[in-house]
Image (cartoon, rainbow, N blue to C red):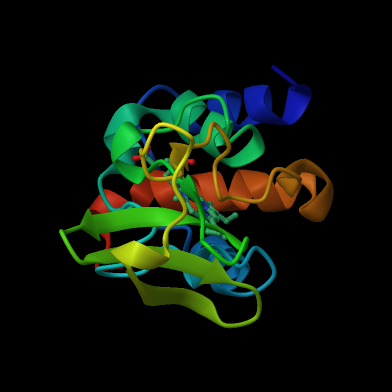
Length: 170
Ligand code: HEC
């Protein structure tokens, strides 16, 4: 683990999270919804990304790993799939439901955010054996470059925010 992660551990002790650093909390929130664009996917009742208010229970290392190395652990519930349509288009998103007639999928559209789309089942291509071309993919939809997108102290601030979420209304 790199130095800045150790620093968070060192300054905050083990489980004794300081909840009164209001200035840092405000800066962290600004990162979460601004520069980090976390709020584009993580918001109340998002159908693409998991809620984060309970993530503090999983521990600081887990939170940190989820941000800097999002492909390390991906919960199957939130795994993305790649769908190929009969017109040859590829779509990546979280499959919400697949009925006899329709596929419902949550897609992260650049600049727009989470969009819920519906496709006719008949418009999904099949492989040679008659199975629909819907394949789970091992990549998280989270950007994989947060370590270069955010500075060490910014990542540390976002981790701090998620650690204290259970005490806050966000
Ligand atoms: C493009 C959408 C998207 C963006 C942007 C995004 N996330 Fe995520 N995030 C997800 C999805 C989907 C998952 C669940 C799959 C996975 O683990 O990658 C997830 C998982 C997580 C988890 C693990 C949650 C758990 O309970 O296991 C954490 C923590 C997290 N994100 C924090 C962040 C932070 C902090 C940011 C911004 C710096 C961010 N995310 C940006 C979509 C996104």
